[in-house]
Image (tube, rainbow, N blue to C red):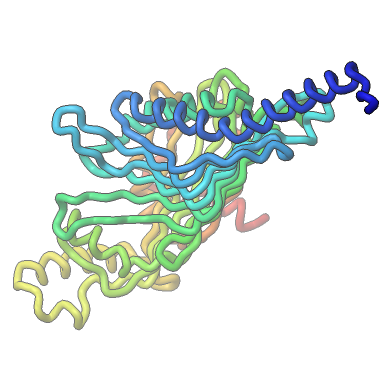
Length: 383
């Protein structure tokens, strides 16, 4: 009986061993990654987290983190408070920049929820929380992220100690951030873009921003708006912090900001339409509650523009990030002008950009009536 070629048999055995080792690594790698990830999440300072499962997609150069949560941890009581959870995180290599010689990745979050709980997650901790979470993601995916996407996200603010208990939220959010590493448009001053939208109490929120994420100082041009939010659905907030409720009213907010070389400039323009504080629904309220609500409603009526049926103002904010300035007196003038002179337009004004930061602004020496009857608005009307 003729024997096969021993050299060929040896090569076949080596090839089989290599294939077997690769298959074994492929089978064990998700469990190795899962063990490493959960160990990292369990040893984070001030947090405790867990991942249910990790899947690999080698042909895409990607893997998915499934059913992850990250809770704030009180080390004294060892109690946990919900902070972040998501159904899925997809981490993948971007193929298009790869063909241009740049190795970058992309992140996609499916149904993430971010929860800020009063006295558990303070605003001062947000930056630290963000940095910790970015470090964690960097450990999982040691690539620069060029594209960032959020689908069906939500943000909650919870105050469990208020009366009534508060859960204010923004839902159905979609965020798309692209070109975060300047991979395609290095010559552009603001090469990256962030576009977002969400539902806010039957209303909508839209945000658009151009930025340079690689700049030493924050460099961006942003505009955003909230339209047609139903204030009645926020009555728990008004009861908890204002001790009154609203029977009717819609809320809108319009804002623009630009920043460059450590300085920024912008404004916030809130507008409330069809406001009714005291109505037939308040018949069962106590006497003092009715007086308080009548006072709040009376002030709003005095400051309401009768033609547009709106209360509105515009708050200018500018300066450096180390020393921001809010021009409160201008906000008062805008409130009075909206009520008695000219109604503010419920839209973004398109007057803030990086170029507006270059303008040398002299101190405003106009008197009260010059500010009230703003000449700039008259010039706009003529145009």
